[in-house]
Length: 217
Image (cartoon, rainbow, N blue to C red; front, side, top):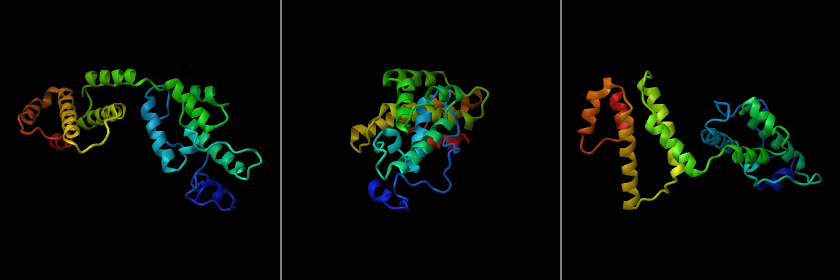
């Protein structure tokens, strides 16, 4: 059902982006970590997943535009736009909230945050690779270390943007990247894992990262 038809009726269809569930409220927090100026891409990814689940992406990417005040759908747009703004503000540190509070639409806030905090692919790739080369297990348990490493790999995967393909070249690239992640994982482990690292590296073919995780656990 289109947005226009959904809003011409007193009851808004649940498939419409103008639909607000009974569980939704302005105090709802979409992500677990408030954005404080660091780790924008991870925060953005989490926000987009949550907003997509609520069918509200159109309010941040600009595809759902503000209707005229006389349009019958204006009140519904205004209500949902205000709700999405509240969700975004609830996920920001107070210092950042103060700087975007008076922007009128969720899309304007989203665009401003992207302009302010999103990095170019080159700068972001450099930062992620720097994190990969410096990370090690240290005093953390293996599961915590693996989770931190996996988060960095996920960020890198998004930046690299390797398209899905079943051709031989793509398969070879993914295999190379998997081996690269395996080596990064093993290099950061503490000395107490030295023996099992040696055993893993002797395997032919090398196991997947998920298999190594199970072995070490």
